[in-house]
View 1 (tube, helix red, strand yellow):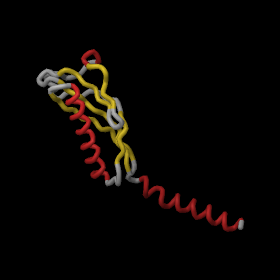
View 2: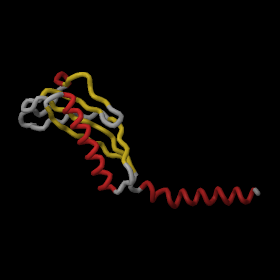
View 3: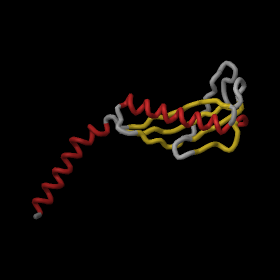
View 4: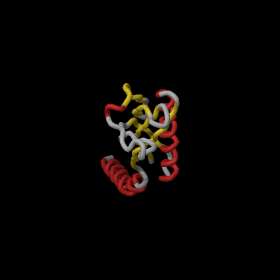
Length: 126
């Protein structure tokens, strides 16, 4: 009986050594950042959220993952027209931030458009 256990553990260890690198070769995570604008803060946050999900799906296809999981991540706000507004300072951000189970959005009043939001997430898959 003891031989059977040893053989089983040896087989399990071999399979992990052999198949483990194959599985983790494409595994990993990417940071997703998506910026959108709208007539209201809520609409801009929803649009940025949807854009982040589309971007994560593109990453999934590009990397050959079978799935992608998003976790909210606070990222640096990314304004559209950097010639008009090169950076978004902390005092420009509208509180509260919009956090969902998948994205973390920060919003501010735009120069050319009423409201702008940048949604951030960590996209992981395999």
